[in-house]
Length: 269
Picture 1 (cartoon, rainbow, N blue to C red):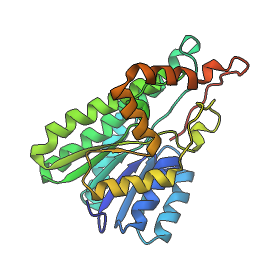
Picture 2: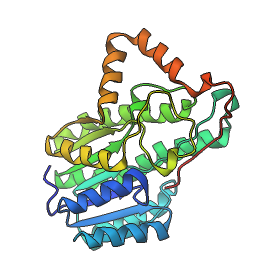
Picture 3: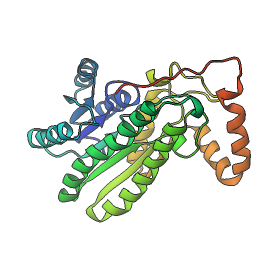
Picture 4: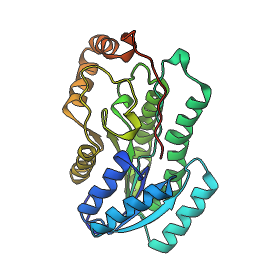
């Protein structure tokens, strides 16, 4: 996909990977970026950065769990700014806590944002893309959508679900010439993970690394974009020697450090 002159909508655009993707798309010549997140103030700051790079920025402060508001906003944006060529579903929250200490409200939030929110906006935009016989959808999953991680049970579950959702949509929407791609970064240095107990031997990448990998993957027309050499090794090992990968995950888990406490952390969209 050539980004030049395209209109893209990015959810979770106020910070972290979403913000980095918005800025990278602007650098690559995108014409217009619709920026979606809950925090209008942060979105306004990102919009200013986008416009400084030469792209038009539209701020859409939305809570993706509010289906009616999202429906109205997408319909208005499509009428006002024209068709959306690229949808990047990047909004998400994560809580880190051992499963036996987890709380239901945290589980519900992860499912509501990571899955239901993504479904809501994707359904609205995919229907319009299918009618035009044109468009691309990127669902941001995670390496944890391939390898479930201790202390991240529900988050891993949502990322596995995103992989299944993406694979199903890829087959369903192909006849309408709508391509569906999954982006799978490994641990990324963002606000969301700053208070996490990190896994041993994992070297965080930057949000800019992830954004550049996405653009390169779009150019190659990749259906799945796995980011970082550590991710490729981990997935390869899991396929060839799953028993060994299970051992590595157990040894790398922060649960094995008995002296540490395990706070609960979350991102904001």
